[in-house]
Image 1: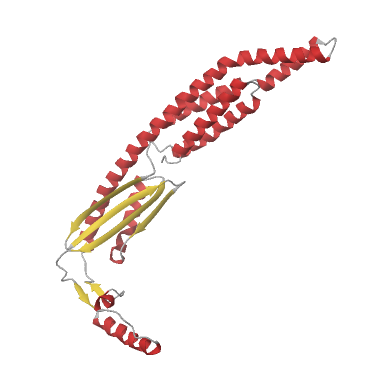
Image 2: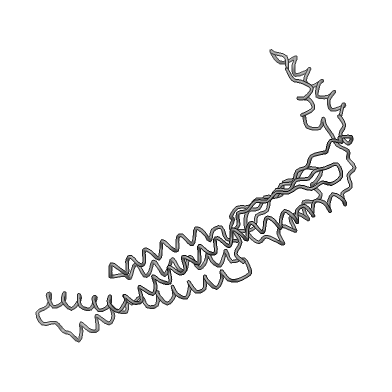
Length: 288
């Protein structure tokens, strides 16, 4: 199933006196790049979080942010008065060295790292279960968003594939007329330059030139690559990397078609193909 690499989901859960919030967001990336942001007291669960994200997501730059807040019952919170005394003593020493006295309130002191502390003992097993349950719920919603956006990307790419097929069919239909025009032009030109041309030699040259200008192989390969894009879009596994490779191959054939073109209509077809390929490439950059 086609999935987008851009998504967002957010949930929270109650665990004891704590309300834990989980936020998942992702953008496109060549590989799977996972960043986990945790408060220090939840650091013990980082490895299981990474393992679950790696199992469910194969590509994208993913950021998982867990935070928590305590409920109204803050009995587990106490003031580290030793740290407060040390902070005030240091402030007095600094104040003596300054031209103006320091001005800060008790709230400023409380905001200083290490002054407010929480109970050191927590039930890690209970917290582990709650956080993983929260992550699984958030991750399920996150994947639904990626699938929903991926379905839209799939439709856009499929629409471009159909348009490319129409252009390649138009080019194949135009090809015999182009070759006739080339032969006619060359005969007229040589007739002007040579009073008595050697038409046997001319036919040989025309055969060689026709081989150089023959775009049948490029058109066949374009059709093959387009069919492969459509096949990959229907596969259940992640398809972004393979689709990106196919865009390179399509672009190569479109460039060759343009360089071989000796006809205004063929040149325009090559341009339209390259425009469609670039539009698909932009969409595919967001596919997992």
